[in-house]
Image (tube, rainbow, N blue to C red):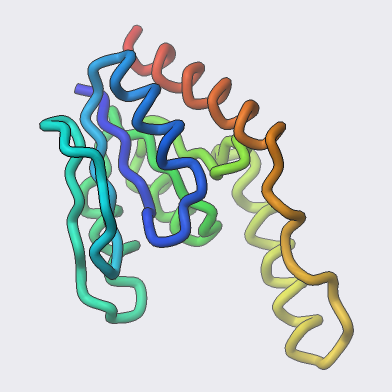
Length: 150
């Protein structure tokens, strides 16, 4: 059965995930380093892991199946989930991570880290989350669900 796994600590689209999951009758598992409020629905679960570095990432990778849709902004976690053969991996802004795109995303991440490490002034991180990002996310999540349900 298709399940949505969420890297939940800083996920800005939890409400959108709940709406899509309810519409399609999917289970949602949020994995986080700290307790957070979640809807009191039998199809939503929160798993709190230790605050050890990468504990949430490690747990998400353990849970991945070919029917999993993983939601994360973490490029390295996205790569691990793709290698674990997740059905789909999406960023909260709706950008799908795929085998074809993950290499470029990792390379860009490494270049930016090197620039920051050398003291170069690099932009202030990702652009602010916007309404169009939510819309794109909903569209891509809907597309991923329908593809996995076929």
